[in-house]
Image 1 (cartoon, rainbow, N blue to C red):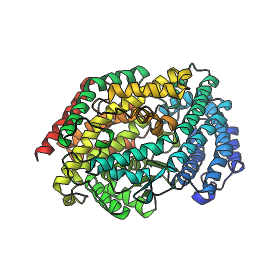
Image 2 (image 1 turned 180 degrees about the vertical axis):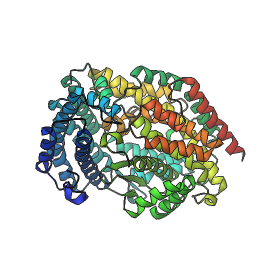
Image 3 (image 1 turned 90 degrees about the vertical axis):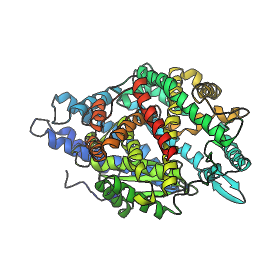
Length: 567
C-alpha cells in the first residue's frame, strides 16, 4: 500500500471516495495477527494522513480567500462526501483493531483513544459533524466580510486595530466605536448560526447516548487527565490570584494615562505616551527577523522555519476577504506545518508568528513517529509548544539579537507580553466558564439574550478594572467575537493551562536556557505517546490547576516586569 498511494498533494487532493474505498476494504478484509499488525497499522495511518491533509489543505484554501467559490465548493464537497464515508470506514477499522486484542508497540495510549472514539461514534452524527464544519465556515465568511471606511479608505477590522494605539484618545475611541458598530450589524446573523450550532451539538450527544454535550465533547477531545471540576478549580484559582494581579495592571495603566476610568479603547495605547511599536514594514521583514530569533533560541528551530519559507508554507499578511485570526495546520503526509496569520505591522503580529512557530516546531519534532494517531496531541500540550516559544524567544527581540527593537523597545515589548499573559487568565476564565454554562443549560443558551446576560455576568466578575459603562451591547455580545465558542467548543482552557506550564518552561530557561530548550523539544517529540501530565513533566512543568502554582507564575511575571521597568 505504501508504494501505491500517491505522495503528490495535487494528485491525492483530486481523489474521491472511490479511490480510497478499495484500500479500506483491503484493510478490513485482512486477518490481524502479531506478525502483521504493525504493517496493517502503517497502511491505515497512511490513509488517515491523506484524508487529514486533504481536509487541512482545503480548509487553508477557503481561509486564505473566503471569496474563492471554487475552493469553497471543493471544501463543501469534501464535507458532504469524503469526510462522512471516511469516518464510517475508520470506525470499522477501529472496531477491528480493538476487537483483535492486539497491542502494537508504542500504541497503548492510542488504543485508549480509539476506544473512546469508538464508544461515541454514531453514523447518524456524521452529517451533523459535517454541517457543524459548514456553519463554522459560514462564521468565517461573516467575520471576513466585516470592513469599515476609515479616513476615506475601506479597511478590514484587523487593519483598523493599529488606530487603537493612537495617542489621541478621541481618535482611538472613534475607531473602536466604528469597529464595534460594524460587528453589531452581524449580531442577528451570528445568533442564528449559534442556535443552529447548539442544536447540532446537543443532538450529537443525544445520538451518542450521553447525558449532555459536555460529556460528549470531553470524550471527543480525549480529556482523560482532568475533569470539569478541575476547570472550576482553575477558575477559582484565577479569581483568587490572577484577577487581583490584572486589576493592578489596569490601575497602573489608568494612572499612567491620567484618565478617570479605563475604557475599552484605552487598553492598547502605550500609557506613557510613546509611539506604537511598529516592528516591521512588510511581511518579508517579519519573516527575516523572526528567522533570526528562532536561530537564537535554537539553530534547529531556526532551520525548521527556513524550510517553511523555502517551501511556501507561510501566509502571513492581512487582506480583504481573508478569514480572521491565525492558525498552524499540520500536513501529515508531507510532515510539514502551514502557518496562517493576519499581520498588519503590529507587535501582536510578531507574537502571533512566534506562537504559531511553536506549533510548527511541534509538527517537525514529531515527524519521525510512525503512526498518524501518535501525531495527535491534545491542545493542552499543543499550546505549551506555542506559548513557551513566545517566552523562550522574548530575550531575542532586540536588534542586537537579530530582532525588531532597540533595547528600550524590546523591554517594553516584553513588559506588554507579560502583562498580557496575566490579564489573559481572567479572560480565559470568562470564555471557559461561559461554555460550561452553555452546555449545562442548553435550553437557556438557545436564547441569545440569555447568552448575552451570562457573558455580561462573567465579564463583570473576572474583568475587573475595565469600564464598559454605556457599552452594554458591545460588552454582552463579546462571546460572538470569540471564534472558539462558535467553532471549537470547549477549546480555550487549554490556553490557560498552557500559559501556566509555559511560564514554568521559561522560568527554567532563566537558569539554563539550553537545557530548557532541550526539555521543550524532547516533550514535543513525544507527540501523543505519553499522558498529558508526563508531557508537562518532560517539558519541565507541573500539571496543576491550583492557586499555589499559579501564584508562582504570576509572581515571576510581576517581578520580571518590575525589573524591566527599572532598566
